[in-house]
Image 1 (cartoon, rainbow, N blue to C red):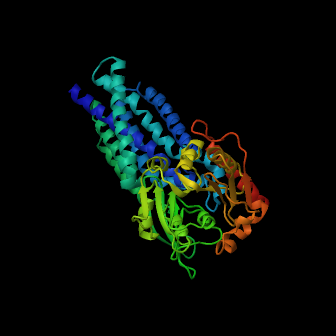
Image 2 (tube, one colour; image 1 turned 60 degrees about the vertical axis):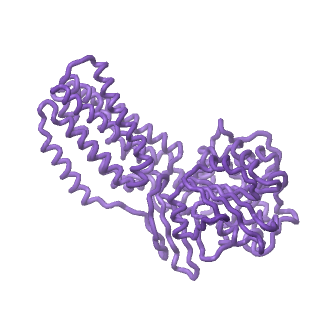
Image 3 (tube, rainbow, N blue to C red; image 1 turned 180 degrees about the horizontal axis):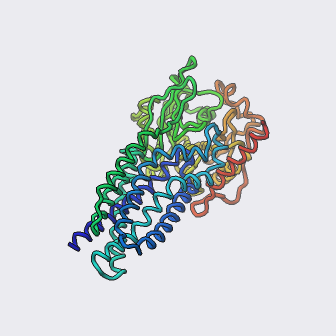
Length: 531
């Protein structure tokens, strides 16, 4: 009998451990559509969960002194199951309470730090606190059913819980979230907790029928009254498809209000941003779209034969279409595109005419830095447009070591083009990236602010200098001169970087998260002065 009891309690510990890790790992994905998945957000989630678990351990230790710890354990696991099942439904309301709708991107990201902390506390503290009570209550129930040393029993409980947690660690990012979605993932975690409650409830003669059935009915009835608020589309826009990827929530929308159809690929809630753009024609998109600047190096270089291109952060393939549509007559594009999210490239093929053939090679599901190491070029142009959650530049793709790697993949005279989400050439993020590229390339860097957008594009060359807007070589001919370059000659729209002695960003010390928040705060301050 004691062996059977120990097996049930060990199983309950393993199920609770697996559920704990599922809840924690999927937590960032649940709030990422509103607050992103930066280190700040991760720290807030981990901090809240650890604090709640600590409180749960203390509460569990107090409850363990009661007459029937198995009853308290069952109640705690049942409460955790119900709270966990509700998380996908409550997340939208909780996040929007601390990040109201209608904010521009720069305004919204002022709330990233404290807003994500508050939303995380509201959503996950009750569930994690209830889960924290499980370990001391399990140990107490185990010891009463099968007396032994506290250390031995505690070690067995922790061992079973950790093994269950290990399963949760691997299954959550590799299967549950990408294949089943967040809602089903949390329902699975809740189901595991119900099973854990059933395993524990038979101990010491406790009859589980009322508790488990009541839990199921309460959850079913309550869920019927809860609706999930979905992202809305603007007037004239139609949603074509929505997917949950291993990295983000992705949707494709189409504008049918004008003479020319346009499609956008938006990530997470989109706010006022988008990742990729499609028009039925290839070539320049128009004012306000930074992708057009990626076509300038080929226009300045006037190549013949083949233009060898590498795009890091391909998205749905906008850069391919813009550059290919503006190449001189007779020049063929030989392109390699890297996109870490395979769902994005799948949507690109379906809705954005992303072509994959011998001249358009696409690598998806692999990090850009890894691909560059195994594809040394040479390239005539490397485009870096890698972002996570709309404004977060991955730290390892912003360092001097990475830019040195890109420098070595370029042919002599080859170009590096970097998109930076920023509000001017004096933005702290622009300055840090430009000076880092300066050091890596041992040359000059040109920053160009894209009119009618919040983007700055950086240009650098291997063994050469990019043209200056105040020099004769700046003109690239039609359609660039009228659509893109005419407004950039004003001194406020460009900046020349030269003479940096030290790279502000490297693999060891990289304050990119802080710089991005400073950039957004600068943009908010500038726009507020215009109102």
